[in-house]
Amino acid sequence: DMLPGICCLNRRFTVEGETYAADRDIPYAASASVTPAFFETFGVDISTARAFLDMDDADAGPVAIVNQRFAERFYGGKNPIGRRFRSK
Image (cartoon, rainbow, N blue to C red; front, side):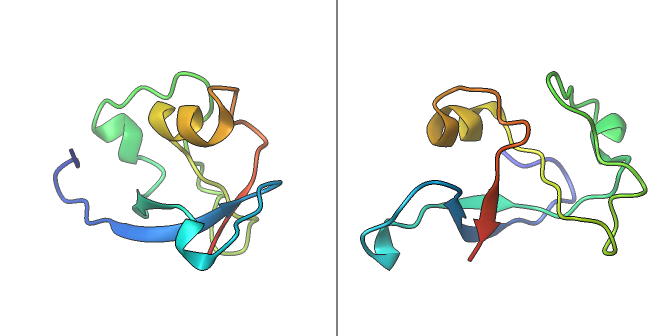
């Protein structure tokens, strides 16, 4: 389920340290670009990380917030903080 006003894109991405035999094996997930106040505005708890900050802009390094399902599927339930993935 998506929150109101959010449009998402299904994007393929690679997880650092993983290899893929063919392009069809590269996973995809829904993604959305949001403002720093998004999670607070909608009352979404960010339990193990920080929310986006104003300094997380186009001039900063890329950052992402993933949900628990993503972390479980792609990181074996291990803490996703500091782990990397790259959009294709």
